[in-house]
Length: 298
Image 1: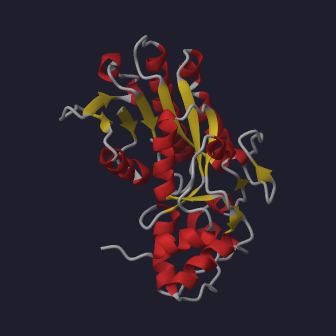
Image 2: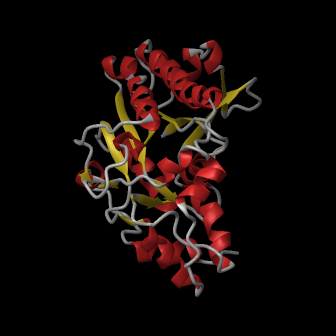
């Protein structure tokens, strides 16, 4: 397949380029600024500029772009950045695809389990309603921006990704070095449920959804959500290190501000749509994920 990818330089995007290319797909990156190779497509979401002709011959679009949620304190200005960096590119892609009679008929759109808000141990599937809070509002607007493409008959899947288990980058990129040193531990009381997925399965799931006839919300999570403290403890065991130095909620709030409440939120989200489509996870349990993420690679 020929795939146009937005957000190709992020943690998931850069890994996805390598994964898809290794599987024989052609990946064209959407880049801000002039295209410098035949595998780049120039666009400017802020200016609303994307030439539909540049997407001719593309089978599917994957949009993973968006400013990092935990990269800065949530000032009013950065909250606007978080929202605009998601809705503006998504709206432009959706409107562009809607004008094309022979353009891409698949749009895989990044989203997040943050849609559900803080729900404790309530079991959540794609049929569950939204929660409340800033990130919930962001996700709802983000998903809503795909409406023009959906109305034009493009198959749109919203990739509601959970906590990404990765060896580098993201939450685990910060947590792993501390656990290796034996100075890590649960965040808060650790009781909040994390709906997680390994980077390996994230990439495999995205590739699967390029052709699986799934539309609408898709929880990109493993089938075994677990309390955060159990996940941290499982990784520490693999590293043969203790995990007893908990980070109190107040200390987390001092460090990252209001985002702390979202780090400590709880979502027990199951990947029902993904499982129903025939996808088989490589890492199904917390133990699987802990073994994989702590493996030393050359």
